[in-house]
Image (cartoon, rainbow, N blue to C red; front, side, top):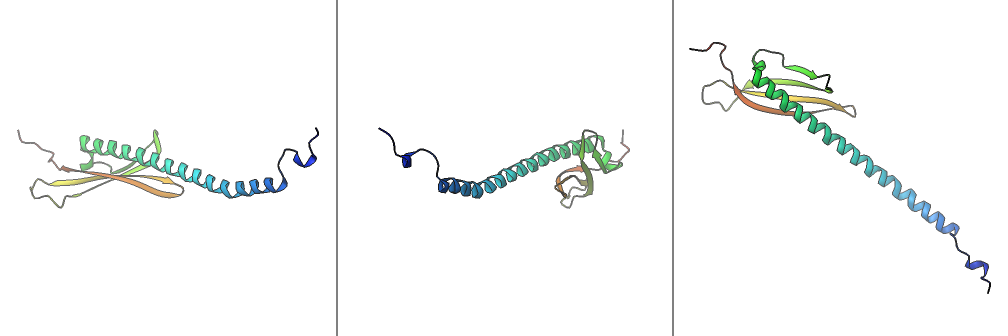
Length: 134
């Protein structure tokens, strides 16, 4: 028995147009979601790297006491050329001990999408005199 021509298999023009319309609506939304996800991932990576660099620089400044006499700005080249740092030293307002407690802060900066971002860490230390009693 022969099948009538109207029962042939395939897509009609209306079905194809409906599928294209659905793709045209959904595809930009999906692409924007992927773009936002990639941007959030990049931002998290930069923040994590900057926090690690800030922690390392803060430890170095405390260990070498460079914060008392040295340069309080710089970068991390050649290993991390996209980041730069600044340190600040100030009197700790909660110091009631009379031990000259100082607040040492390090802020790490980087550019992302033409916008400057930063992460900062701080610690308390005290300024020792350069002479010691023996």
